[in-house]
Image (cartoon, rainbow, N blue to C red; front, side, top):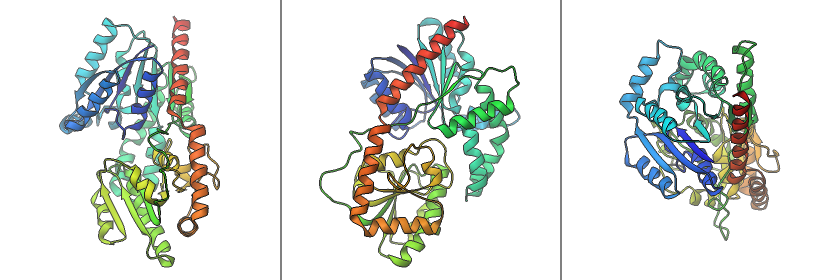
Length: 407
Protein backbone atom coordinates (compact mmCIF):
# COMPACT_ATOMS: atom_id res chain seq x y z
CA UNK A 1 0.00 0.00 0.00
CA UNK A 2 0.97 3.61 -0.45
CA UNK A 3 0.57 5.43 2.85
CA UNK A 4 0.42 9.14 3.67
CA UNK A 5 1.56 9.26 7.30
CA UNK A 6 1.12 12.46 9.35
CA UNK A 7 2.67 13.16 12.75
CA UNK A 8 2.96 16.23 15.01
CA UNK A 9 6.60 15.39 15.82
CA UNK A 10 9.45 13.77 13.93
CA UNK A 11 9.50 10.01 14.62
CA UNK A 12 12.65 9.05 16.52
CA UNK A 13 13.85 6.48 19.06
CA UNK A 14 12.27 8.75 21.70
CA UNK A 15 9.01 9.09 19.70
CA UNK A 16 9.12 5.35 19.58
CA UNK A 17 5.65 4.41 18.30
CA UNK A 18 5.68 6.12 14.87
CA UNK A 19 9.42 5.47 14.48
CA UNK A 20 9.08 1.72 14.91
CA UNK A 21 5.74 1.35 13.15
CA UNK A 22 7.08 3.16 10.09
CA UNK A 23 10.20 1.02 10.05
CA UNK A 24 8.14 -2.17 10.35
CA UNK A 25 5.67 -1.02 7.69
CA UNK A 26 8.56 -0.34 5.29
CA UNK A 27 9.90 -3.83 5.95
CA UNK A 28 6.46 -5.22 5.11
CA UNK A 29 6.67 -3.53 1.69
CA UNK A 30 4.55 -0.40 2.17
CA UNK A 31 5.57 2.90 0.54
CA UNK A 32 5.35 5.85 2.93
CA UNK A 33 5.21 9.61 2.52
CA UNK A 34 5.57 11.39 5.86
CA UNK A 35 4.40 14.91 6.65
CA UNK A 36 5.61 15.96 10.08
CA UNK A 37 5.84 19.01 12.28
CA UNK A 38 9.38 19.57 13.55
CA UNK A 39 11.29 21.59 16.07
CA UNK A 40 13.85 24.20 15.11
CA UNK A 41 16.97 22.30 16.22
CA UNK A 42 19.24 20.04 14.16
CA UNK A 43 18.16 16.82 15.91
CA UNK A 44 14.78 16.66 14.18
CA UNK A 45 16.41 17.09 10.78
CA UNK A 46 18.91 14.34 11.62
CA UNK A 47 16.07 12.00 12.49
CA UNK A 48 14.23 12.96 9.30
CA UNK A 49 17.35 12.07 7.29
CA UNK A 50 17.45 8.66 9.00
CA UNK A 51 13.86 8.02 7.89
CA UNK A 52 14.82 8.98 4.35
CA UNK A 53 17.56 6.35 4.45
CA UNK A 54 14.80 3.77 5.00
CA UNK A 55 13.12 4.93 1.78
CA UNK A 56 10.50 7.16 3.42
CA UNK A 57 9.65 10.41 1.61
CA UNK A 58 9.80 13.00 4.40
CA UNK A 59 8.59 16.61 4.42
CA UNK A 60 9.10 18.61 7.63
CA UNK A 61 7.34 21.79 8.72
CA UNK A 62 9.10 23.78 11.42
CA UNK A 63 6.87 24.79 14.34
CA UNK A 64 8.91 27.07 16.62
CA UNK A 65 7.84 27.82 20.18
CA UNK A 66 6.47 31.23 19.16
CA UNK A 67 4.09 29.64 16.66
CA UNK A 68 2.93 27.07 19.22
CA UNK A 69 2.24 29.87 21.71
CA UNK A 70 0.34 31.88 19.09
CA UNK A 71 -1.70 28.79 18.12
CA UNK A 72 -2.66 28.24 21.76
CA UNK A 73 -3.59 31.88 22.37
CA UNK A 74 -5.87 31.85 19.32
CA UNK A 75 -7.51 28.63 20.51
CA UNK A 76 -8.32 29.86 24.04
CA UNK A 77 -11.72 31.41 23.13
CA UNK A 78 -12.68 28.47 20.84
CA UNK A 79 -13.88 24.89 21.36
CA UNK A 80 -10.52 23.42 20.33
CA UNK A 81 -8.17 22.08 23.03
CA UNK A 82 -4.71 23.59 23.22
CA UNK A 83 -3.25 20.14 22.51
CA UNK A 84 -5.09 20.08 19.19
CA UNK A 85 -3.42 23.26 17.90
CA UNK A 86 -0.02 23.12 19.60
CA UNK A 87 1.87 21.64 16.62
CA UNK A 88 -0.31 23.09 13.85
CA UNK A 89 1.29 24.69 10.78
CA UNK A 90 -0.96 26.03 7.97
CA UNK A 91 1.62 25.15 5.31
CA UNK A 92 1.45 21.53 6.43
CA UNK A 93 -2.31 21.53 5.90
CA UNK A 94 -1.97 23.15 2.46
CA UNK A 95 0.66 20.60 1.46
CA UNK A 96 -1.63 17.78 2.60
CA UNK A 97 -4.43 19.05 0.37
CA UNK A 98 -2.05 19.34 -2.57
CA UNK A 99 -0.67 15.83 -2.15
CA UNK A 100 -4.16 14.34 -2.00
CA UNK A 101 -5.10 16.16 -5.20
CA UNK A 102 -1.97 15.25 -7.11
CA UNK A 103 -1.09 11.74 -5.86
CA UNK A 104 -2.85 8.47 -5.15
CA UNK A 105 -2.68 7.10 -1.59
CA UNK A 106 -4.37 3.98 -0.28
CA UNK A 107 -4.55 5.26 3.31
CA UNK A 108 -4.07 8.52 5.18
CA UNK A 109 -2.73 7.81 8.67
CA UNK A 110 -2.88 10.66 11.24
CA UNK A 111 -1.19 10.23 14.60
CA UNK A 112 -2.05 11.89 17.93
CA UNK A 113 -4.46 14.58 19.02
CA UNK A 114 -1.87 17.22 18.09
CA UNK A 115 -2.27 16.37 14.38
CA UNK A 116 -5.91 15.29 14.38
CA UNK A 117 -7.37 18.61 13.15
CA UNK A 118 -5.68 17.94 9.78
CA UNK A 119 -8.42 15.38 9.08
CA UNK A 120 -10.48 18.32 7.79
CA UNK A 121 -8.15 18.42 4.77
CA UNK A 122 -8.84 14.76 3.90
CA UNK A 123 -11.83 14.26 1.63
CA UNK A 124 -12.72 11.00 -0.08
CA UNK A 125 -9.74 9.00 1.17
CA UNK A 126 -9.83 6.28 3.84
CA UNK A 127 -8.27 7.81 6.94
CA UNK A 128 -7.06 6.10 10.11
CA UNK A 129 -6.45 7.93 13.39
CA UNK A 130 -3.77 6.61 15.73
CA UNK A 131 -4.93 8.33 18.90
CA UNK A 132 -2.10 6.52 20.73
CA UNK A 133 -3.72 7.27 24.10
CA UNK A 134 -6.97 8.82 25.30
CA UNK A 135 -5.81 12.32 26.23
CA UNK A 136 -8.98 12.97 28.24
CA UNK A 137 -8.13 9.96 30.41
CA UNK A 138 -4.59 11.32 30.88
CA UNK A 139 -5.84 14.80 31.83
CA UNK A 140 -8.38 13.41 34.31
CA UNK A 141 -5.62 11.52 36.11
CA UNK A 142 -3.20 14.47 35.93
CA UNK A 143 -5.75 16.87 37.40
CA UNK A 144 -6.30 14.49 40.33
CA UNK A 145 -2.91 12.99 41.04
CA UNK A 146 -0.03 15.17 39.84
CA UNK A 147 2.09 16.62 42.67
CA UNK A 148 3.02 19.48 40.32
CA UNK A 149 0.60 22.40 40.59
CA UNK A 150 1.35 23.61 37.05
CA UNK A 151 0.56 20.20 35.56
CA UNK A 152 -2.76 20.03 37.46
CA UNK A 153 -3.68 23.54 36.32
CA UNK A 154 -2.91 22.89 32.65
CA UNK A 155 -4.87 19.62 32.66
CA UNK A 156 -7.93 21.29 34.21
CA UNK A 157 -7.73 24.18 31.74
CA UNK A 158 -8.06 21.86 28.74
CA UNK A 159 -10.08 18.96 30.14
CA UNK A 160 -13.68 19.90 29.28
CA UNK A 161 -12.82 20.85 25.70
CA UNK A 162 -10.70 17.76 25.24
CA UNK A 163 -13.55 15.46 26.30
CA UNK A 164 -15.91 16.80 23.65
CA UNK A 165 -13.22 17.15 21.00
CA UNK A 166 -11.98 13.57 21.34
CA UNK A 167 -15.56 12.30 21.17
CA UNK A 168 -16.22 14.26 17.95
CA UNK A 169 -12.99 12.98 16.41
CA UNK A 170 -14.39 9.45 16.49
CA UNK A 171 -16.94 10.48 13.85
CA UNK A 172 -14.36 11.99 11.49
CA UNK A 173 -12.20 8.92 10.84
CA UNK A 174 -12.85 5.55 9.27
CA UNK A 175 -10.97 3.67 11.98
CA UNK A 176 -9.18 4.54 15.24
CA UNK A 177 -6.32 2.71 16.93
CA UNK A 178 -4.94 3.02 20.47
CA UNK A 179 -2.19 1.32 22.44
CA UNK A 180 -4.21 -0.33 25.22
CA UNK A 181 -7.64 -1.65 26.13
CA UNK A 182 -7.99 1.00 28.85
CA UNK A 183 -7.65 3.75 26.24
CA UNK A 184 -10.11 2.00 23.91
CA UNK A 185 -12.68 1.82 26.71
CA UNK A 186 -12.07 5.47 27.65
CA UNK A 187 -12.64 6.69 24.07
CA UNK A 188 -15.74 4.57 23.65
CA UNK A 189 -17.10 5.97 26.92
CA UNK A 190 -16.59 9.52 25.59
CA UNK A 191 -18.55 8.61 22.46
CA UNK A 192 -21.47 7.30 24.52
CA UNK A 193 -21.46 10.38 26.74
CA UNK A 194 -20.97 13.21 24.25
CA UNK A 195 -22.19 12.06 20.83
CA UNK A 196 -25.85 12.15 19.79
CA UNK A 197 -27.61 8.76 19.43
CA UNK A 198 -27.59 8.94 15.65
CA UNK A 199 -23.79 9.43 15.49
CA UNK A 200 -21.69 6.62 14.04
CA UNK A 201 -18.29 6.62 15.78
CA UNK A 202 -15.45 4.78 14.09
CA UNK A 203 -14.44 1.37 15.41
CA UNK A 204 -11.53 1.46 17.88
CA UNK A 205 -8.85 -1.25 17.71
CA UNK A 206 -5.95 -1.88 20.09
CA UNK A 207 -2.56 -1.95 18.35
CA UNK A 208 -0.09 -2.33 21.18
CA UNK A 209 3.36 -0.79 21.29
CA UNK A 210 6.25 -3.11 20.65
CA UNK A 211 9.88 -3.08 21.64
CA UNK A 212 12.94 -3.51 19.42
CA UNK A 213 13.90 -6.98 20.61
CA UNK A 214 17.24 -6.95 18.80
CA UNK A 215 18.31 -3.57 20.12
CA UNK A 216 17.02 -4.09 23.68
CA UNK A 217 18.32 -7.53 24.60
CA UNK A 218 20.15 -9.03 27.59
CA UNK A 219 23.90 -8.57 27.49
CA UNK A 220 26.36 -11.43 27.85
CA UNK A 221 27.80 -11.92 31.33
CA UNK A 222 26.56 -10.59 34.63
CA UNK A 223 27.63 -6.98 35.00
CA UNK A 224 24.68 -5.90 37.13
CA UNK A 225 25.00 -3.95 40.34
CA UNK A 226 22.16 -5.37 42.47
CA UNK A 227 22.10 -2.20 44.56
CA UNK A 228 21.45 0.17 41.64
CA UNK A 229 17.84 1.10 40.88
CA UNK A 230 17.09 2.85 37.58
CA UNK A 231 14.26 4.91 36.13
CA UNK A 232 14.32 5.75 32.40
CA UNK A 233 12.07 8.18 30.58
CA UNK A 234 11.75 11.61 29.02
CA UNK A 235 11.90 13.89 32.02
CA UNK A 236 10.05 16.79 30.42
CA UNK A 237 6.88 14.65 30.63
CA UNK A 238 4.85 15.59 33.70
CA UNK A 239 3.79 11.99 34.51
CA UNK A 240 7.45 10.92 34.65
CA UNK A 241 8.29 13.85 36.91
CA UNK A 242 5.40 12.96 39.22
CA UNK A 243 6.50 9.32 39.41
CA UNK A 244 10.15 10.12 40.10
CA UNK A 245 9.31 12.63 42.83
CA UNK A 246 6.97 10.13 44.45
CA UNK A 247 9.65 7.43 44.41
CA UNK A 248 12.35 9.75 45.77
CA UNK A 249 10.17 11.24 48.52
CA UNK A 250 8.05 8.26 49.59
CA UNK A 251 9.78 5.03 48.56
CA UNK A 252 13.52 5.67 48.73
CA UNK A 253 13.52 6.69 52.43
CA UNK A 254 11.89 3.35 53.23
CA UNK A 255 14.53 1.51 51.17
CA UNK A 256 17.40 3.49 52.72
CA UNK A 257 16.15 2.76 56.24
CA UNK A 258 17.19 -0.86 55.63
CA UNK A 259 19.75 -0.55 52.81
CA UNK A 260 21.34 2.93 52.84
CA UNK A 261 23.82 1.94 50.12
CA UNK A 262 21.16 1.60 47.37
CA UNK A 263 21.67 4.06 44.50
CA UNK A 264 18.96 5.58 42.30
CA UNK A 265 19.62 6.67 38.71
CA UNK A 266 17.18 8.93 36.85
CA UNK A 267 18.00 8.61 33.15
CA UNK A 268 16.26 10.83 30.61
CA UNK A 269 16.44 14.15 28.82
CA UNK A 270 15.29 17.54 30.09
CA UNK A 271 14.83 16.93 33.83
CA UNK A 272 13.20 19.97 35.50
CA UNK A 273 14.72 21.71 38.48
CA UNK A 274 12.53 19.74 40.90
CA UNK A 275 14.18 16.53 39.66
CA UNK A 276 17.71 17.91 39.35
CA UNK A 277 17.58 18.98 43.01
CA UNK A 278 17.27 15.33 44.03
CA UNK A 279 20.94 14.84 43.13
CA UNK A 280 21.88 16.83 46.23
CA UNK A 281 21.87 13.40 47.86
CA UNK A 282 24.94 11.66 46.41
CA UNK A 283 23.06 8.36 46.18
CA UNK A 284 20.81 9.83 43.47
CA UNK A 285 22.16 10.49 39.97
CA UNK A 286 20.26 12.61 37.43
CA UNK A 287 21.90 12.05 34.05
CA UNK A 288 19.89 14.21 31.67
CA UNK A 289 20.05 13.12 28.03
CA UNK A 290 22.03 9.98 27.25
CA UNK A 291 22.76 8.60 23.79
CA UNK A 292 22.00 5.01 24.78
CA UNK A 293 19.75 3.74 27.58
CA UNK A 294 20.94 0.15 27.36
CA UNK A 295 24.08 0.40 29.53
CA UNK A 296 22.00 1.82 32.37
CA UNK A 297 19.37 -0.90 32.09
CA UNK A 298 22.03 -3.59 31.73
CA UNK A 299 23.91 -2.50 34.89
CA UNK A 300 20.90 -1.91 37.11
CA UNK A 301 19.68 -4.50 39.57
CA UNK A 302 16.10 -3.20 39.36
CA UNK A 303 14.15 -0.94 36.99
CA UNK A 304 11.24 0.98 38.50
CA UNK A 305 8.20 2.68 36.99
CA UNK A 306 6.40 4.31 39.93
CA UNK A 307 3.80 6.13 37.79
CA UNK A 308 1.05 7.78 39.82
CA UNK A 309 -1.03 7.98 36.64
CA UNK A 310 -0.56 6.68 33.10
CA UNK A 311 -2.24 5.97 29.79
CA UNK A 312 -1.35 3.52 27.06
CA UNK A 313 1.67 1.27 27.41
CA UNK A 314 4.80 2.34 29.26
CA UNK A 315 7.67 1.81 26.83
CA UNK A 316 10.16 2.14 29.66
CA UNK A 317 8.70 -1.03 31.20
CA UNK A 318 8.88 -2.93 27.89
CA UNK A 319 12.49 -1.85 27.33
CA UNK A 320 13.58 -2.93 30.80
CA UNK A 321 11.82 -6.28 30.37
CA UNK A 322 13.48 -6.77 26.99
CA UNK A 323 16.87 -6.25 28.68
CA UNK A 324 15.87 -8.89 31.29
CA UNK A 325 16.09 -6.22 33.98
CA UNK A 326 13.58 -7.05 36.74
CA UNK A 327 10.79 -4.47 36.99
CA UNK A 328 8.84 -3.09 39.94
CA UNK A 329 6.03 -0.80 38.86
CA UNK A 330 2.83 0.79 40.02
CA UNK A 331 -0.61 -0.51 39.12
CA UNK A 332 -1.07 2.47 36.76
CA UNK A 333 2.10 1.59 34.84
CA UNK A 334 1.19 -2.10 34.66
CA UNK A 335 -2.45 -1.70 33.60
CA UNK A 336 -1.81 -1.41 29.84
CA UNK A 337 0.03 -4.76 29.67
CA UNK A 338 -1.18 -8.33 29.26
CA UNK A 339 1.52 -9.48 31.68
CA UNK A 340 0.98 -11.41 34.90
CA UNK A 341 1.78 -9.54 38.12
CA UNK A 342 4.24 -11.46 40.25
CA UNK A 343 5.51 -13.51 37.33
CA UNK A 344 6.56 -10.96 34.69
CA UNK A 345 6.91 -7.90 36.95
CA UNK A 346 6.20 -6.94 40.54
CA UNK A 347 3.32 -4.51 41.07
CA UNK A 348 3.08 -2.28 44.13
CA UNK A 349 0.25 0.05 45.11
CA UNK A 350 1.77 1.78 48.15
CA UNK A 351 5.24 3.02 49.25
CA UNK A 352 5.80 0.25 51.79
CA UNK A 353 5.11 -2.53 49.30
CA UNK A 354 7.14 -0.77 46.60
CA UNK A 355 10.14 -0.50 48.92
CA UNK A 356 9.75 -4.11 50.05
CA UNK A 357 9.74 -5.42 46.47
CA UNK A 358 12.79 -3.37 45.46
CA UNK A 359 14.68 -4.57 48.53
CA UNK A 360 13.81 -8.21 47.79
CA UNK A 361 15.29 -7.94 44.31
CA UNK A 362 18.37 -6.02 45.51
CA UNK A 363 19.15 -8.75 48.04
CA UNK A 364 18.11 -11.90 46.15
CA UNK A 365 19.99 -12.11 42.81
CA UNK A 366 18.42 -15.45 41.85
CA UNK A 367 14.92 -14.11 42.27
CA UNK A 368 15.87 -10.96 40.34
CA UNK A 369 17.31 -13.07 37.50
CA UNK A 370 14.18 -15.23 37.27
CA UNK A 371 11.91 -12.19 37.18
CA UNK A 372 14.06 -10.56 34.50
CA UNK A 373 14.00 -13.70 32.35
CA UNK A 374 10.20 -13.91 32.68
CA UNK A 375 9.89 -10.28 31.59
CA UNK A 376 12.00 -11.00 28.50
CA UNK A 377 9.80 -13.97 27.59
CA UNK A 378 6.70 -11.80 27.98
CA UNK A 379 7.83 -9.09 25.56
CA UNK A 380 9.01 -11.67 23.04
CA UNK A 381 5.52 -13.17 23.05
CA UNK A 382 3.44 -9.97 23.07
CA UNK A 383 5.37 -6.89 21.92
CA UNK A 384 7.03 -7.38 18.53
CA UNK A 385 6.79 -4.27 16.33
CA UNK A 386 6.27 -6.29 13.15
CA UNK A 387 3.25 -7.98 14.74
CA UNK A 388 1.89 -4.52 15.55
CA UNK A 389 2.53 -3.38 11.97
CA UNK A 390 0.62 -6.40 10.63
CA UNK A 391 -2.29 -5.52 12.92
CA UNK A 392 -2.16 -1.95 11.64
CA UNK A 393 -2.16 -3.18 8.05
CA UNK A 394 -5.34 -5.15 8.80
CA UNK A 395 -6.90 -1.92 10.13
CA UNK A 396 -5.91 -0.16 6.89
CA UNK A 397 -7.61 -2.88 4.87
CA UNK A 398 -10.76 -2.59 6.97
CA UNK A 399 -10.81 1.19 6.54
CA UNK A 400 -10.44 0.85 2.77
CA UNK A 401 -13.20 -1.75 2.61
CA UNK A 402 -15.50 0.40 4.75
CA UNK A 403 -14.89 3.47 2.57
CA UNK A 404 -15.72 1.50 -0.58
CA UNK A 405 -18.96 0.22 1.00
CA UNK A 406 -19.92 3.74 2.02
CA UNK A 407 -19.37 4.99 -1.53
